[in-house]
Length: 439
Ligand code: PLP
Image 1 (spheres, rainbow, N blue to C red):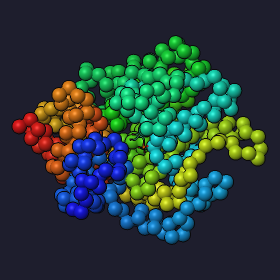
Image 2: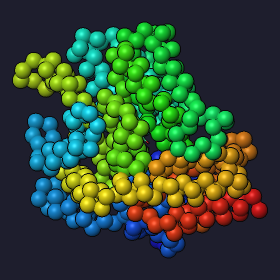
Image 3: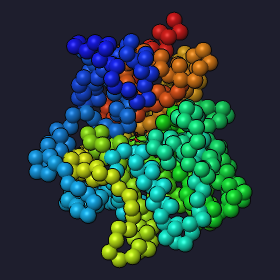
């Protein structure tokens, strides 16, 4: 390999132990299907669809060709005051997958941008409605809503907040839904619906008319996959309805088939007012995110502005980039043509059987899962949160598996095109790596 350690001094890597990485670099050089190849030439099974974004597998020629053709025709177009046809096509295709009337689509480039966009749309809506006093936001402990200021304010992951101090004021957190009593629960826990009453308590404490929105991931993903207790999301919906609170589902991980349905909303039978999405939207080929907004929220904001001026002073230079739109349309074509959401649903039972068979393997303290998404908790190392996770990330990589580790939880999210043999292989590598660590 050509790279020397000195080359690692210029790039400050995100969410990485940079000092450790420079000592022991793990570079990915190539990808195809459900595999990566490292700079050492080793093959690595992609057990997390990259970072939840490549359910159709890597290196799909249909998407690459669509992006290439788009770049040769229109490489960039300003999206303020002008448009291009691909963005309307992409918006139309996304709207068709949405529940209810969430058919107004606003584009960004990352999940974090989608979250901050959703926060601002909520604020603009309440002001347009004459309810600018609704300034409080509700989120949940252990939530991950990206890394921009709004999203970090909503975040409930202590390590993501701790180093930075204060964020957006007026954010209150529901309790998370993990409990030692629900260890090794598969699918939706039957207990725990009462945790949704935390929202009612905030209504009682602060006044329902001070609360702007409640943001939740249908399944809390990055924290290690916390599946909502049965009836929990329905109860949040009821409380929001009774109090004029906007319910936002952050579906950056759950969206596009991960639950076996198009969105978590359909999987759990609850329609929010706004959905944020990113990741699998372009199968990871181009950075892109979207916010789907209920028709009447859009209409309220737009109609509140005087004629002839911009209605929402918000947008990004790369909103609806032509190459991203082309990638999104080509990706949605693949999902549809290959019935990949159904494929995810079909593979789910086998996947969860195999993952739950890991119960009893060394260092594992809990397992949860739904659809093609599973979380595994590991015993902390030396009592330092995150140290076991880092150790495992490296050990698994060296043994030929990529999954995502957040603190000391592992998240497995295979591509929807994975075979049963590849699922077996993922679980075998996890078991073998844990055995090596305790040997
Ligand atoms: N929201 C959720 C639920 C996520 O899981 C993530 C990323 O993992 C984000 C938001 C942020 O997305 P991005 O990393 O694209 O900014």
